[in-house]
Every structure is written in C-alpha cells, then in structure tokens.
Image (cartoon, rainbow, N blue to C red; front, side, top):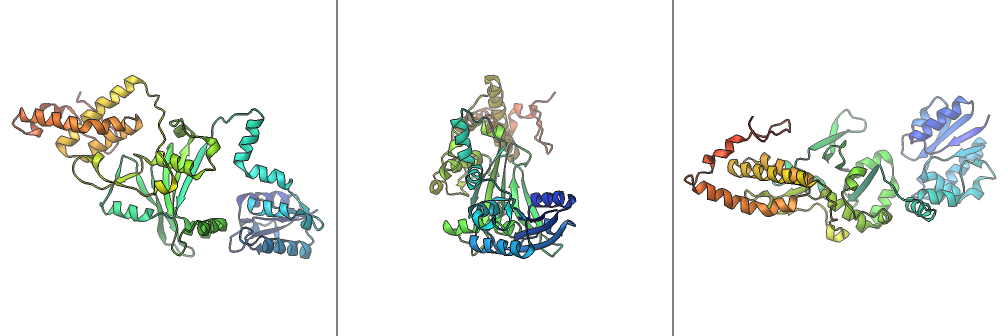
Length: 391
C-alpha cells in the first residue's frame, strides 16, 4: 500500500479523504496550516501529522516544509485539497514530482477552474448561457456596524421595515462563556438576509490569512477588530433586478450596487423625528459614494389588481397610524409597500392623506379620534397577521 500525505487537514474534505484512503489500508499522514486545528490529524487512520506555514503568507516556506516532510517520511503520493495548497504545489510541480506523485491536474486547468468568471466566459464562447445561481454573498469590511446596532438598541435610531434583528453568539476558546459576535437582519431562510459579525474573530478559527493581507493592501485598520457586513441573496431575489450583470461580478462597483439596492428599505436605519418616518434622516452604514454603488431599478411584474389592493391597504394602515400614533401600523404598511414595489408612491401620498384626515377631523370638531371609520379595523398583533375589517 502507498504512503500518502494529505494536506489542508483543517477541512472536512481532508477528513473524508483520510478516512477513505485509510480504510483501503494506505499509510496516511496529514498536514495543516500553522495554528489550525486539523480534524483529519486526529482520525484513527492518520499515522503522522505536521504543520506548515500558510502558503498565502510565505509560499516558499510552505513548499520547503512539505518537501522536507516528503523526504523524511518516504511519501509516495501528495494530495492537496484546497486552493491554499493546490495552486502553489502546481506551480512547483517540477520540484515535488521527483520525490512523490502529485494528485493534481495541470496548473492551467487549476487556474481556469479557480477563476469562476473565466469559466463563465469559456462556457459562453462554446455557446452556453448563464441560467441561474443558488446564492450570492457580497461583503463589506471595515465599517462601524456594531456601533449602529448599539445605537438601535439605545433607541437613538430605528430600523425601517419589519425585518427581524437577532444577535448571535460564539463560545470563547477554552471557556464555557458565550459572547456576542454579531447580528442578523432578516431570516436566514428567506430570499435575502444580512449578517454582521466580527471578522477578525472568525479568522482565528478559519485561518484565512489572505484576507488579512487584503485588508492591509486596502488600508483597512487591523489594529482593532474588523467588522464585516455580508449580504446573502438567493436566486429568486435577484430576479427583481434587470440590471444585475453576472459578467461584472469582478467589479467592486457593481457588487456595491447590488448590495445597496438590496439594503434599501430592508436594512435602512433612520433617526426618529416627528410622525412621518419616511422623512426621518437616514443613517448610512456604508459609504456608497466611495464604493461607487448605485441603486439598481427594480423589475416590477406585480399584477395590477395586487398593486391596487396593496395601495388601498397601505393607505388605510397609514391613516390608522396617524390617528393612533401606533408605529406598528406604519411598519406593516411600509413592508407591504416594499414587497409590492410602491414605496415611492407610498412616501409621496402621505402628505395628501394627512391633509385629508385633518379636513375630516375639522368636520367632527377637530378630534381625529372621533372619526367613525377607525373602529372598522382590527389591530396588528404579534402573530404578524392583520385582518383589515371587522366581520
């Protein structure tokens, strides 16, 4: 049986390969990044293990460590698992293969597979067309996102809309205590959601050192913990925008435009001031001008009867909100406006509705509470269901 070295021992795939090759009777050794926990290294099929420098920090030190282990242990086959090891070893194939076989295709094939946009271009040249995607994640690093969250908790600012906001926790290393590491806006099961978290803490577990190099290259302050805001968007959400160009996903400005468009009226904070929340000053968590992010137009395919029903409902909910000063009625109306793409109309009509209500109130002595139609409506309740009219 062969003497095999499996790299990237921190990954789940490395553990699977270790078990599979070990069951066949091969002698298995596992290598992993310095400072990383390697599940594959504690497998009963692993006979030896070692650590090596992270390839993205020092490729030659990584290569030397692997070569030294191969020589010292009579390794016959090296199996790299992730791009951290596949690409650097493929670049130095000539130095490795006199000692051991390398389970890798050519460097050209690897680089083509690693470059998703190039893969799309090849498919296009062959007559293929892009059909859809499962999920798109877009992230911005270096903002003061936790500070915004604390201001919301202190009720200095409010989140417009009905998206739920939930903290999430991590367990301290070597301690049973849990600490807040971030928060979610929206449900992770929905078509889009936002996750804000401490990326510096996350790197201590994933050991993706190349991200730290990227921060330094882009002048992100790493002397303090770096916070990340990450948008997750599923395929059905993307269909609301005609101007998303999948050939431009390597352009930061286009990614910023997609993110900005999806955050608008969904993860939008405002400073409370007066009754009409649509006029409250916005609190921008991201400098969109710096990222050249623009708002993309939505593709509205809502049937006209549904739009009409939504407008009637929004108007009545706003009127109840104005009379009762109950914010939850406005929140429901605003969410309906977002889902039916009538937010601009909803915002524009509010001054006219207020004027009409004040006129009606004067006819009953100036008392808004005395308007008779108010009592035809049920209240919004915690189950997030609303019945518009009494039976």
